Length: 265
Image 1: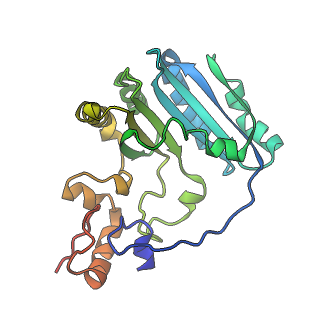
Image 2: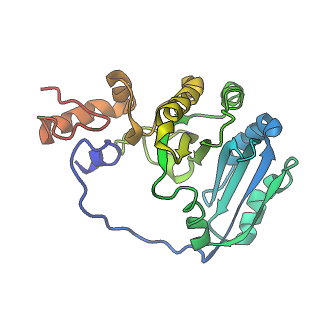
């Protein structure tokens, strides 16, 4: 059961409490964002592939893309180094030397400031819709599709979660989560204030996601709205074992409003 809970998409029960092991962080971290014009995007994403692939565990490097309120599209790289700032400076040196950014800075930042940086933009009361997909690499084809179809609309933003590192050193079948070797998770997030725009903006997020979906190797299970076949394939080689556990603990499929693993009986 515990194996299945770690990646099984809510199919086996309801968690009522958590215990966390805390690790010392900060109080200051080397962090920041560098923003580049949209026209530099293709070269920047190619650079990102090499930069992030070579990053030590302490360094997270993520991409953001979108449109400013003034209608100007942009591509940015955010870095966070959890460790000695001097070592962090050596790790981000290639980024400091790269390209011709139009804004941004990297320096020491309070951890609490970093954690609350998006609280206003992603505040309670707004409308949200999110799609995502795991990718093996930022291939030339993926880069072309990401940039070539990027909506010129401030309501739609794109981000990546940089993976690999410790995540990838857990075996694919050691937990139910099957995407241990993915290079990154790419998310498309729609954010807007007016409920009257719900249908149009959800369609816009879905349309953009569809434009590069063929490059993905799976998706974040909790965002599932795919067909039964795609849902099952997203669990990879772990699906047969998950079905056996489902048969044992939830044979009547009580927990089914999710990326559902159907009992075989």
